Image (cartoon, rainbow, N blue to C red; front, side, top):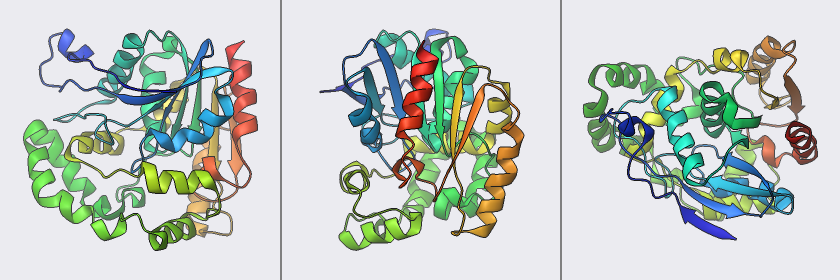
Amino acid sequence: MKVAPNRSEVSPNEAEGDKNIMAVHCYFKKVGTGKESIVFFPAAGFSGIEGEIFADYFHQDYQLFLCDLPGYGRSSGFDQSIKTKDLADWVIQFFNEEKLDKVHLIGHSVGGFVCLCVAYHYPDRVRSLTLLDSGHFNLPRFPSEMGKSAVLMPLLSLLSRIFKRKIYPFIGRYILPSIEDSSDTIETQENFLKFCRWMHLNDANPYVSEAFFKAAVPLKQAGLPLHICFYQARPKKMLSAIRIPVCLFYASYEGIEKKREQFERKNIKSFLNQPNIRIIKVPGAHYVLWSEESPLPETAEFIRAAGN
């Protein structure tokens, strides 16, 4: 088992002469020694260790890279506004440094958006794309997924377009502390049980507790451009344009939240007739990778088929 940083000093953008995008490095944990590679990106708030469930399942046949998102964990981030191509370039830089040609991508939530950007801009570098409750909807004007920052997102988005680099130190100093209330992120048993109830997860699932107590990471200033890029992007349009094999697991929210159930059902209809996209409904809420009805067997079947 290997844990290693991707120690690049120059991003693809800088190599092409663009000095406005900060050079970043991707921190990852490597597991397995197979010929084909699986790269996993987690949801916001977790390090790449959120994907430990995939590492345990696939490590005998594949090499896996469990990556921290830019601006989270031990990955550095961006210092100004970015576009989806910048995000994809960052991942491709990581591929190149690790000598990865074509990979299987798995991404949850914001991590799914990162994977989607790569598949959209560099389809020739992707064997398959597995999206975990991600990609099939655009974020609403006030996205509940972004917690306390939801009411501020329209304003932050506008300011990021106008001021680019200058706005982030201001947000980091004056707004971010109020968004990241430390009382909500303290790793206590009480907060763990609260998280499990909120997300309708089994608190006896060892992968859930492992992620909560060992892989939870706070949002940093360097992670803000990623979130604003996600907010400004149109993932549905990007996913519609992709022609590589895609497996999309979406949370049903049935019996949990009627409004969100209708939201998911409405958005998933856009992709029912797209032949390259396999759609699988998962009972429960957002963390489909830890659902009682595990997506692992279907993910394995999909990846094996795409690798042939």
